Length: 314
Length: 81
Image (tube, rainbow over all chains, first blue to last red):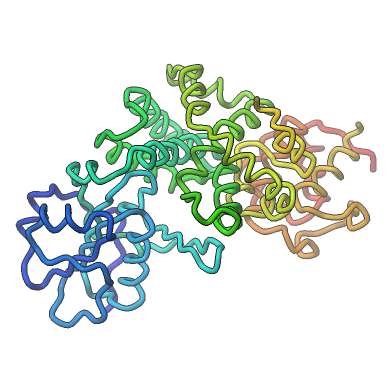
């Protein structure tokens, strides 16, 4: 039986989820939230995915974007009859609401877009915020900002999407960068909007550099969110040096562009950028060819390597 | 830089061609990197370089460098023939 294509997942409360937890529900979660999930759900929790769907009608996946995307792909390919409920343990990816799955395959990103990947239901469990290390929470805020900004500025964004994401940016401006459960909802909204337009060079850098940086710096805790957080300021500075789309959007929607730009600067980590700089030089043509780079709000040309190599955003 | 040179540089940059791979007779089929995302990049580049924003139906109909020139000339942007 093929699962029906889902346009948009329904949102449940944690109480609605708890009411559904019977023997036919398999809960798969990431190790860092196992204890919290087991306590919150009072239901057995597995650190491994289901091996078969015998006796199960629902798969609940609790974790970051990586685990949620793995669950989405697993359901589509192996268990299409299962209902999929996604519970993010951290904000940023928006994986709990999207038809996109980004898998890490041999150091590269495999991006799959398929309506069959959309979860049936998602739940935001604010109590899971306590499990997030502070630094990771800040990086995750950077991931949300990257989706909202790149989605709004994308050449593929309609006026409606731009307005939707401007509203997200207005909400973001009220939130502290760090552990605040309100980021879950804003993250989902940013991902929904961005999915209707595109991303840009921030994601081009993040996708191209994650594998090589992790090889170079295996204990550096360098993941997608941290790279988005670091590259937001350099890329937005680059975009602003080439076109006035930033000022136009901020003015049109009454956003405080100076404050927002300062927040991006606050997310920047010079140590990460310095480690990435030789990789940017070496891999510049690969970065230019990245699908995300090719939908950047301004054209990224080969000669623009100089801007990033010489850190002209400083 | 005259418009011909600007367009040549734009095509070379968008599709990551070598200089000697370019000709004004190039078609989409001859450029491996010219896919739907390439058309998006080209549209952004045309707007930045020539100040013209392709209509969606125009962008979808572009299959060659000559098509780009034809559209831009129809909006008052001159090229040397």
